[in-house]
Amino acid sequence: MTLQQLRYLLAVVEHGGMTAAAQALFVDQSALSRSLQALERELKADLFVRSGRGVVPTPEGTRIARLAKKLLGGVREIEATFRTPVEEPSGRLTLGGTQSLAIELITSVVPQFRARHPGCRVEVIPFDGPEPAAEAARSGTVDLLLVDLPAPSDLKVMPLRHLEIVLLSPPAVRLPDPVPWEAMRGLPLIMPTPGSKRRAQFEQLFARHGVVPTVAMETDERGAWVSCVAAGHGSLLWYRDLADRFASLVAVRSLSPPLIRTMAFAWARRPLTLEARALLEDARSRGVEETKYI
Image 1 (cartoon, rainbow, N blue to C red):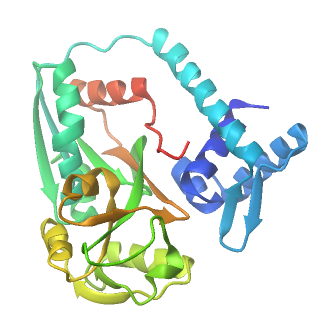
Image 2: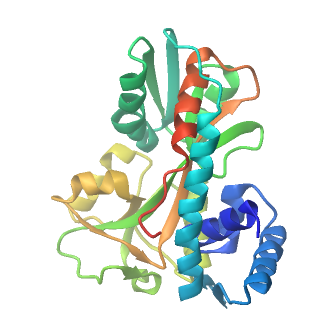
């Protein structure tokens, strides 16, 4: 048994499937599958039930995933003990992300960083989509980006947090919680505009679950999404961390099987500033924040 196998196991449980786990770990899916099959042979136990839609952990798989989480947390603590301290930053740090992820930066990432490094000045730049955000990283307009994985291959990345994607609906909409994917057939949805990268990702997601979305509204103005849901125009897939802030206005429900995305820092392949290195070091010392499912 290896630490790599345990990381693979945990990723598959968190992401709900081999494909999503392989993308988050940047490994070949066949290699990930072979490694887990070898682990099952060693343990003489079935860790997953495989179906046409993906994999579901068995009770043994869930138990081992919980133990793996504790073990890998201990490994990170050992690594942090012997890590070379970072020089105290006191300059300027420029961060960027899409409008939704910029909110995460402002409300979560920046306050934590500033509490540790009060002498550092931080600016957050929101972008209209992932493409202009990535170009800002390439051009040096921002030091670090907050992105959803997978990121463009020419950028370096460091996973930060696993996020649950949930369904936001008008309060009057009656649905079970969690919501089976098939229950979204015919459900009016708010979607990004046709031709955008985000729209293509949504369409691939629904196709994977055999759902043809009923489009009620198309807009890339993410700042208006929640107000459109509250007004009864349709339902929306969004991050739980953000959605829970509007629970008094809309109904927030998990999906079944759950949908998990990995948030990461990304940057151009050039030397980083002291301030950017300090932020990455702080994030690395805490490890990847896990979902509520493990």
